Length: 208
Image (cartoon, rainbow, N blue to C red; front, top):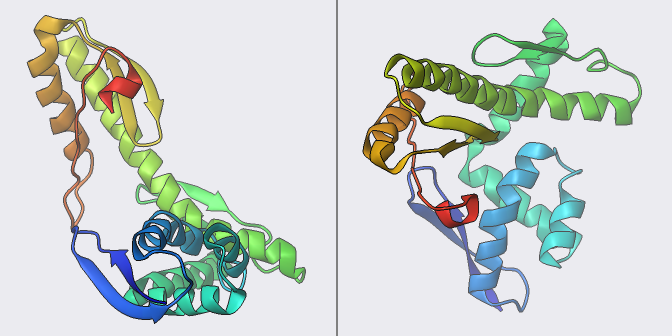
């Protein structure tokens, strides 16, 4: 049956295309696509991405390739970024984060396709994941310093990817929320805004 494939854009808008995939419901296919395909695409290059998409969505390899092609047609700069990252790593022998931390890739020019492919995926992933790590670490240092400078009793107790977990006395709630959001959003200057959300609860699950 024809279903509408919806790729979620960065600003929350949606780009749609009609495409025949499977007899899954439109909702189910769209949910799987939005949750899985962007991650797989940035984590692997064709044809390596075809198998995990086929397995996750339960569709044929031909349909998986069509979805990959459609994704790159919708977001051509994603594919360009991947190719540019690999070419730069081959030339320099390393890739680097937004703050200049280097990840050396000694196998980027290997004659062994499997070994080279692993280095190529790192050339794509390391700048993204490493830059995210740069940003959260900058925010953590600044938040820690402000908590101490302002004499607050709040403790920063856990970092998971781009999330920070705090133990906050009730009377410091409003001040700490303002402080944390300010520092996370101002951690680094980009051409797009950094948006920080805040949740509260007696445990991490509840805060989500």
